[in-house]
Amino acid sequence: MTGEAAAGPRVGVAIPAAGLGRRMGGVKKPWLELAGQPVLRHTLRPFLADDRVVAVVVALSTEDAADPPSWLTTVDRRVQAVAGGDSRAASVARAVGALPADVEVVLVHDAARPLVDRGTIDRCVRVAVSGVGAVAGLPAVDTLKEVAGGDTASGASPQVVTTLDRSVVWQAQTPQAFPADLLRRAVAREDLFDSATDDASLVEAIGGTVVMVEGHSRNLKVTRPADLPLAEFHLAQLGGPGAGGAA
Image (cartoon, one colour):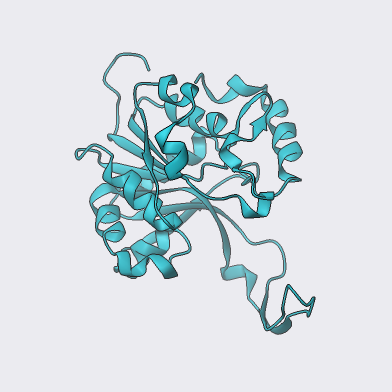
């Protein structure tokens, strides 16, 4: 922070980090070490380097929220930890509820995406300021199949139903940015939580407009063990932990 008034909207950031890490073998992804620091610390860095960001709320598991790591509580005065909910949507709702009432734009970002760049953040904020939601992402490049059936336990393979038109499909990333009042109305709809796959789907469900904006192929989500060395490779190419701004 420079100590000067930031140009642009007052931005709040909600980071759901209460997941159980099942695809990581039960290890909580935010606490995994990446280049000597927790994944979550890398994730926070570009937002804390942005003077428009006035508050960051991290939704942790109930256990972690009761005793968060000392580095998280001291990294920056704008950072606050709260207990998350039983689903991602519920955790986002609690984080959004803890943001200051006067934020104009809310960014929701996955705790396990430690490599988001400032350009992606700026593009999302710019769209949200115009009054609609924004989802960072990339046009699909792989052939996409809709399937049915299959059973992981028995090893039965799902059957292909149809091949989708990839020219109209994007792969969603985060951040996802919204006018604050629009997202607050969306996360108030607890009846939609079970069917929501991301924050934009909540906004879509209440009739809000959401557009896609260009993300970055480097903005990967650390989901499985093989993702960590890839994230470390990208981090090294960027110049190490401080490349995105001090935290």
